Image (cartoon, rainbow, N blue to C red; front, side, top):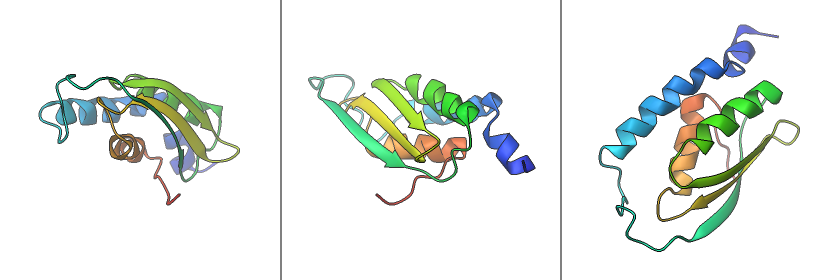
Length: 109
């Protein structure tokens, strides 16, 4: 396994997402302050190179920590991440940016 693959599988990459989340919370575009009624959305995002269960866990833990995310189901066999979220608190663009910040580049649907 290459060093790039091992780096993607390491859970210590979560600090990247946490820094990104703090940046976004400081004045994220589309922030409604929780005033909209919750509307749950489920989306499947294809990504490049989810290598193993460790990668799945990194994605699951990081995205689950995002405000508004209610469920995360990454699958390394299909290279897809299924996410249920409150569209008033987070959007698909934010989820895709978070995946990219973790090193899992989203691909076109």
